[in-house]
Length: 229
Ligand code: PEP
Image (cartoon, rainbow, N blue to C red; front, side, top):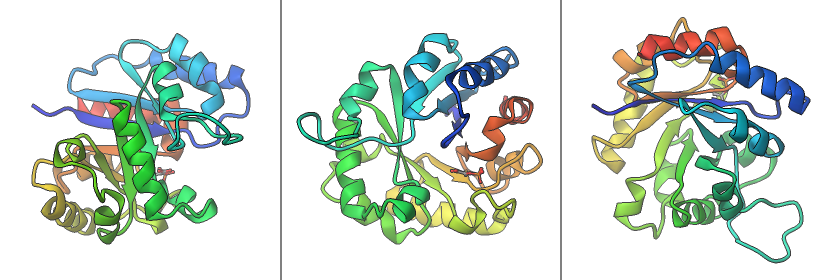
């Protein structure tokens, strides 16, 4: 049976490394049954090393972004190779906040995907339009495309408390699968809570969830994990 992915995107939170370790411990100590669930936590870059050292075997480490080149003069950037070295297994690519505030184009996202896949890590590719997929995966061999986890995140649902209806989300899920194949892993993201989480899996048939705000609330985040188990 395919595992359900529960991915926590901490975004630019919390504000200190001490709080980050505290948040991780509060999640870690609450998680019991993860047999059917792949739990991934994506903290800010600066906390990756610390979280990587303190996390349990039930939690996988993910990054919120990466750069596509491996070395030389790119001030401020972090490569997929560095992320792999820190113990990351997953990298979020093309989050709508990066597309919007940092003007990431499909061409840039395509290069990032190639870099992540080149390191043997799994990208979590965020899209809000099905038309983005073909541009983002251009030139990537089919075998590698299979390693990309898609995350359908309607922009208007992110951080707004207005989650997408299961019916509409399912429609997008099926459209994505028409492009990538019926068994391709697709996650839903956008105002997920313990109240609506199960509906996206059971009714809308997603293979997991990408969670922002609720991943910063240990009780709520673990409740979602337990619901999947
Ligand atoms: C996200 O940041 O990817 C996200 C889905 O955020 P939220 O759960 O807060 O809507």
